[in-house]
Image 1 (cartoon, rainbow, N blue to C red):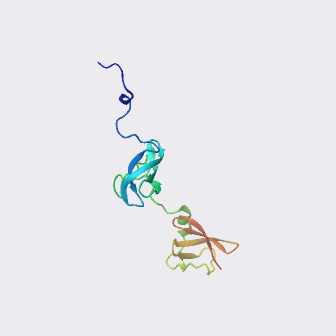
Image 2: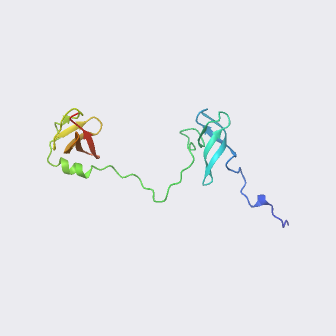
Image 3: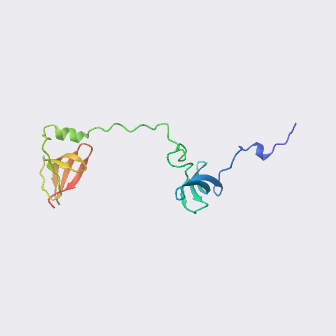
Length: 153
């Protein structure tokens, strides 16, 4: 019976990860799994490494992109929730109530708009002018958000 225990009896077996140590990681410049020096650790996991071949520094990647181990695992809180379904903006619902959306005016910063007009923006879609501000700006309500656009320029 051995009464004396060694330090190795109390530590977990396997490689010891620490800043300055080495680890195999995906090199973003070489595009290969190579030996890297650990530059920074967070919560016991390497977060920043330097390739010993090309000397580039980058975030730690456990494997190539697209592989299940392509990135270090991120811990999420227990209260993580999926993003809610996009809903029409409340102001949009009120603005559309009595409007005819079938014939919108194409938006151009050179055109002049008045309150109540329906316009078609190339990126944001159909919108309704809710107000005109001094300085050549209009407040437009789109289905997803309210935006400030320029006009009469």
